[in-house]
Image (cartoon, rainbow, N blue to C red; front, side):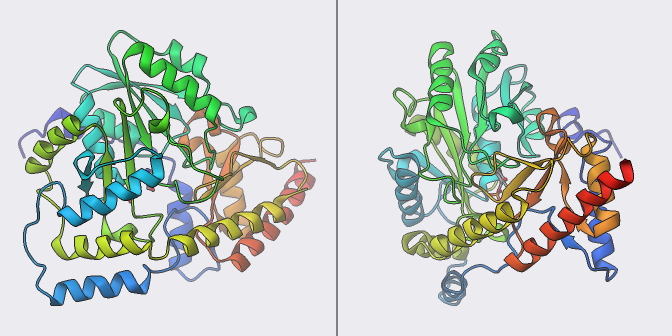
Length: 393
Ligand SMILES: Cc1ncc(COP(=O)(O)O)c(C=O)c1O
């Protein structure tokens, strides 16, 4: 075949991507082994029945057609209301654009603020798609690590040091995947200050905003930030709708107008009947409280079970769908730890270093399993840790 573009070839450079333990665990589970999978971030339950029914009704009622590019008006209105709640800033429908999932909102934001040759700063540990999203825009980026000892809170001084003359944006994610850290007011204010002084965009990925961590604080609410913050939202986590591909981007109206041009040449609007179901789900908050309560209960169960485990330290783990455990006192090589835990105890977790240097020496545990399985996994972890130490001694 003729040569593909360097742009698409460079999005995912070949080589190890850190998911080897997960895929090995999945293969063994599919072969019938008793594996507890705590490596993925997708719900173990279906979308709320009311949302499913709304979609079925919409299909039957003939919602089969092209929609307005930025989203059907009632969907934009419902998303704007949700953004008002998420960010604390009154949001109009003209300030949001519906996208097929939070990832597409992030892609649009990155395309919208960075030209080839521009530079961005990404706060780590981060969600796996971030580097590729910048590469797809031809932009370079600097990763600024948070420190485990700081509970993975961003360090403004380190971030400011990474600002270059061609820096256009900083990308953050709170509540955070993979650490579960919820960025505090002081850290967000310091970040906002950097953005204002250097005239930067702040890309704020808030797809986990309903899942724990106390009251959600969006940097869009800070003084002077609404004009330079782009918020990535999604129904995947909050409404139990990962496979429906529903998200949106919130930002200043003139910027969102430009995003409609991008939509014209990419997705050309959303699926009609899916949009109708999303309106109902957003207007009625189908599943939101139950899902939030379920994850909060699971987090408590797991953290209680891990509490007092010798040499295992909880870091971050305040919100979102994950718990991050520092196991470096037992085994500094987190990949080795994760492989051995899978081999000896049949539990699949993600090595922290898959998410960058800051999470080295950690394992990430997904809360996407029922409480009894999380309890069982914690028991296996306790046994594994004490045996590991004994064998090493
Ligand atoms: C931090 C973060 N941002 C964005 C996404 C994208 O989610 P979606 O495209 O399903 O909305 C995810 C998915 O796991 C995520 O963890």
